[in-house]
Length: 169
Ligand SMILES: Cc1cc2nc3c(=O)[nH]c(=O)nc-3n(C[C@H](O)[C@H](O)[C@H](O)COP(=O)(O)O)c2cc1C
Image 1 (tube, rainbow, N blue to C red):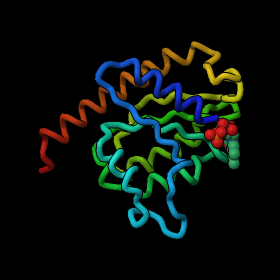
Image 2 (cartoon, protein in one colour):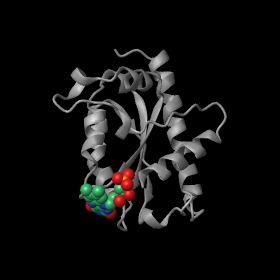
Image 3 (cartoon, rainbow, N blue to C red):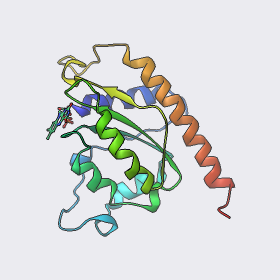
Image 4 (cartoon, rainbow, N blue to C red):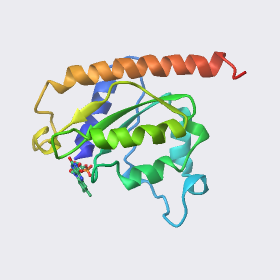
């Protein structure tokens, strides 16, 4: 059920001029599990992270945390993320919209060098949020997504300016 949420985010990102978005379904990344970290870096994922100014992470809540697969994939890169923006969209079957998973993910994102924004989007009872065709049922999500994306764009632009113009002293 995270996929319709991710597709919705890509659609809303696509409404903004000058923004290029790629949807990466981490379930399709061929990462080995006999090692972890940069040793198993996937060249395609790494180059997409290098190109990105910001990440929108759609994260399902699994047993009050984020998914193990998400951590495994995030761990496979490091320098690619530094001084880039990140916002998290929580997905859950229960009423809390993935908030517990998001809270646990924030210190991980910080350690990776990502700069998180102060808005999230929370899809609670996600099984009811989309119809059979994958279309959003509740339009109330759209202004929340808009607020989240406006903040993320500000952060992404600010950090890009910083990476390009401000040296670490
Ligand atoms: C292993 C597992 C644990 C889950 N734990 C929670 C949970 O703690 N809280 C919750 O609200 N939903 C929980 N769910 C429901 C998922 O958050 C929900 O089904 C969401 O759609 C999962 O995204 P996915 O379909 O992309 O995997 C869990 C689902 C799985 C598979």
